[in-house]
Length: 261
Image (tube, helix red, strand yellow):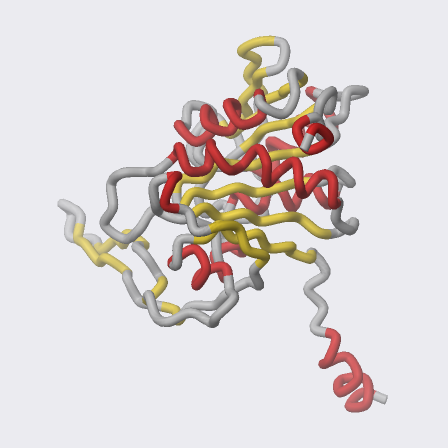
C-alpha cells in the first residue's frame, strides 16, 4: 500500500476539462490531484465547451490568459487547451500525466465521440502523454451532483492505473456513478457501451417568426449490454474503460481488400 500511496509523488500533472476554468468539477479535480503530487498545472477553456469533441480552433485566434505561474485558461476548445499547454505554456516542463474533468455528467458509450472531456485526453495521448478522462454521472432529472464520490475514489484509481500502465495510443475513460460515496458498489473494467439514438430536438420560434432549435438529450435510456460502462455505472459501479485511438475495424480489412484486389 505504501507504493500505491506514493505512486505519483513528484510527477507533473496537467489538469484540464470542457466545463471551463470556473467549473466545480475542476475544483474537485484539483483536490484529487493534490492527493497525488505537488506539481500541478491547470489549463482549461475560458468558457464551457461541452460537446466540442476533438475540435481545433482553426478560424479564430486562440488567446491564453494567465492567472498564476501554473494556472491558465484558453479562449478555445479542450483540444486547444492541451495543445497550448504542451507546446507553449509548459514548454520544457511537459507533464507526466494529463487528467481531464471531472465532467458534470457521464461520458459513456458513444458520448465519448462528442465529449470535450475525452477529447482533451485524446489530444494528450496523441502528443505522447498518458491521459485519463474522469466524469461524474448525473441521473436524468437529478440536480444534486455527487462530487464527493469522484473525489473519494479517483486518487487510488489513478494511482493503480499509473502503476499498471497502459499502451501508447490508449486513453483511460473513468465514470463515477450517481450515488453517494458510501453507496458505490466497487470498480469494474468495462467495455464501451451503446445506446439507442433519440430525437430530442426542441423546436422554437423567435420574435421575428424564424425557427430555431435547442438540441436536448439525444439518448433513449434502454437496457445496456452487461459489462458495459453504461450498465455498470447504472448499477452503482465505477467504470474504467481503455479507449484505443486506432478506429480501424480490423475484421473488415480482409473483406475489403478482397473486394478491391
